Image (cartoon, rainbow, N blue to C red):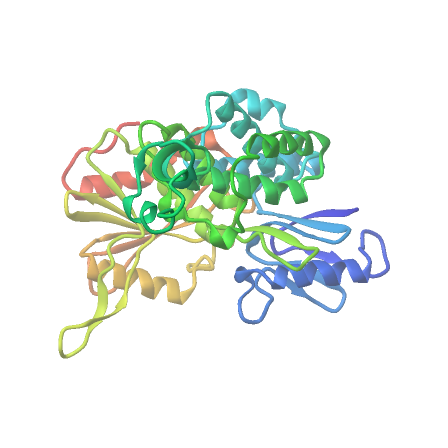
Amino acid sequence: MIRRTILEWDTLPYGDGPGAIPVPAADRIAAVAASSPLAGSSGGGVIEHGRKSLRARGVVGVVAADGCALEILPKIDFPGQQGEEATGSIRRRLVHMLAVALNMKIDAGQITALDWQRETLLEILIRLFSEKLVDAIRQGMPRHYVEREDDLSTLRGRLDVKRQFTVFAAEPVRLACRYDALTPDIALNRVMKAAIARLGRIARTADNQRRLRELAFAYADVAELPVAALRWDQIVLDRTNARWRELLNLARMLLGQRFQTTSTGGQNGFSLLFDMSTLFEEYIARMLERALSGGDLRVVSQGGRLYCLETEDRRGVFQTRPDILLKRGDTVVQVIDTKWKRVSARIEDPKRGVSQSDVYQMMAYGRLYSCGHLTLLYPHHGDLLGDAGVLTTNVITGSDHRLETATIDVSCVAEMSSRLRKLTQVACRSAGAPTVGP
């Protein structure tokens, strides 16, 4: 089995030479990646298939084909770490970002037991899912009453009069019964079984394979459906089964229903991919909610939805959806747009690598939402001097609106909340209210 790990935007050579993989293996990996919805119409949105190498783009995860697998990790700098140590730290941080975005709790025992330096991202996620599912089943599998119809020798429930006096008019020894039966064969359990079946075909470590076999046995009485036939709309989480919410979110991700992920491919291929721009946006929104909890600021993700233009008959066109709005009541006090890109480390560059289209977009947000505090938020990286925070602040011509370029260090979770609060303090003061506490 050929296995390689690279970072986003890095290349993996194929053919002859040190570190290169065979040409057929590269072709198979590229074909599976091209089948992903994230690949776009050109098929190169996940991996660019060059003449001598495969180049990863801004999508991370795992692409597996017959006899080979490629793990793509995000570029997150950990000062002083290199090689396997740095790779393990990146996997740990990526799983943390996914857990925050999915509202999933991972206890300290699970974190300590994971082999971050040797297990791939896919095996780590399979392990987390299977261990959590085993613990949940020990507390009891959810069951619901469903209506059944059956022809029995004794009455059960109530008699289906119409069927009894038509189908069994000449055979009164059989009774057409309609009754409620308690069964585990419900939509929630079908989702879990579909995840077990899919992961069972791709798990490689012995422990993961063993747990998935045990789980498949536990779900033997649940119907197995293809992913496309699963009825997500029939799943109802209430106080009786609320503890399954995390598992449902994790299963949704593993089955390709979250963060534009996909777990499809050719007959001998599989991919589990994450758009880092989407994940970064939701991660920051969730962390902001935690950082500002208890205050009067409200975090609205992908909200607003005001239109840039109106037709003559007052129909809106070109709807906007800012990544994050900070609101006090109905007033927008700050607009934050997240960008999973690396800003320029050149201090002499006043633009810091910010694209002109992003500036135009933020100017439109400031005008539409009557907000004077606009922030473009990027991930911090090691080439930037100093700590994460505001890099530049510019006044938008002809207004009192200010557009700032800022960074946040996703490698340092301990300081994340305090730095996010610091980024919102100007908005709090400009709105005439006290800043959020430290």
